[in-house]
Image 1 (cartoon, rainbow, N blue to C red):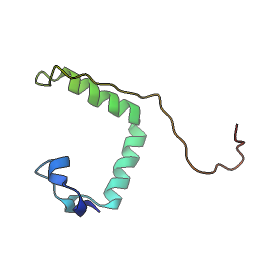
Image 2 (image 1 turned 120 degrees about the vertical axis):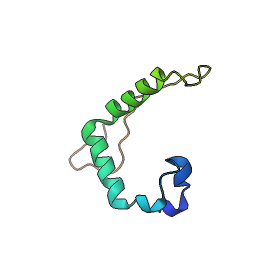
Image 3 (image 1 turned 90 degrees about the vertical axis):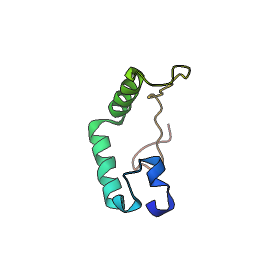
Amino acid sequence: WSRKLPVDVLIGPHCSPEDFSDARLARTLDRLFEAGVDEVLSAVVRRYLKSPDRPKKYTIHQDATTVALFGAFDGQTPE
C-alpha cells in the first residue's frame, strides 16, 4: 500500500515505501494508543509552537474533544 504514496514527500527523503508495512503501522498505532493520542498530539503542537523558525502569520487549532464511535456494541441501547 505504501508504494502508492509519495513517502519521500510525506515522511522525508530518507524514507522509502519498503520501510512501511501493515505490521509496522499496527505496532505504531498500538504505541500511539498506549502513549495517549491526545498527549502525543499536544506534545507535537507545543514543540511546533516553540519552534523559532515557524511561520508566525498562521494560527493552529487543536480539537481534542471529538469522540466518534462506529459499529455495533453488544448490550448497549441506542440512547
